[in-house]
Amino acid sequence: MFNQFKTIILLGVLTGILLLIGQVVGGTSGLTIAFLFAIIMNVGSYWFSDKIVLRMYRAKEVSKVQAPKIHAMVEDICKKAHLPKPKIYIVPTDNANAFATGRNPQNAAIAFTEGILRLLSEKELKGVAAHELAHVKNRDTLISTIAATIASVISYIAFMARFAAIFGGRDNEGMGNILELLLLAIVAPIAAVIIQLAISRSREYLADQSGASYLKDGSGLASALEKLHSHKTPMRLGNPSSSHLMIANNFSGRALLSLFSTHPNHNDRISKLKSLKF
Image (cartoon, rainbow, N blue to C red; front, side, top):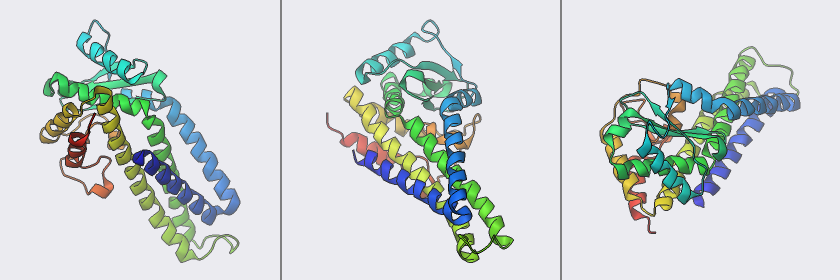
């Protein structure tokens, strides 16, 4: 419940930044244009992001005949979570990872890399699958798309605002102080990214808890997270912009500051999972 509330607050703050920068840069008309731009980007991302991501990772759909154990595992979790069964994909990479995508539970897909299928035990893989299916049930793809889109719009408007400040802006009506505009144009996109990442971390904690609740056991996912952290290899496919979808962010070999990470600290996640009671 706390993570759900936190997500709502963070999305509200993100929207507030968009409103503020749109108003400062272009007054009422600027605000309207920013909203229209955000809506168009959201609709496009909502309908096509799953196809783009799966293609980006060269994911191949597998049938029951090709991967009977994976299909049986996913079917079992879906029954427990009261979810329709998603399409199942395999990603051809040694990197150990998994992700879920799709605009809603009826049009979802779950993907496992060849690396994670080799690395994890059956119990650990089931914990990972439950986590990813929790993202589907919690509509995290939609939420992360909205957050990413709003942050992108803020960054775009801020980029235009810097030009406006450098070249003297427009007339005084609705423009405000040039230094104020320049400061807002620099600070707003940084704040937007930080909030977007905070939303991503909140959804990860929620998916951990939800996935563990489907299985009435958090130990499988906890063990999987320990293995994934100790067997990090760089992701050769895809793009860091999609790192929030992954069970583990392996795009960089160096640890990022927690403030700028798409995922919570793995030790914190493991500790919370081990403390869960069912």
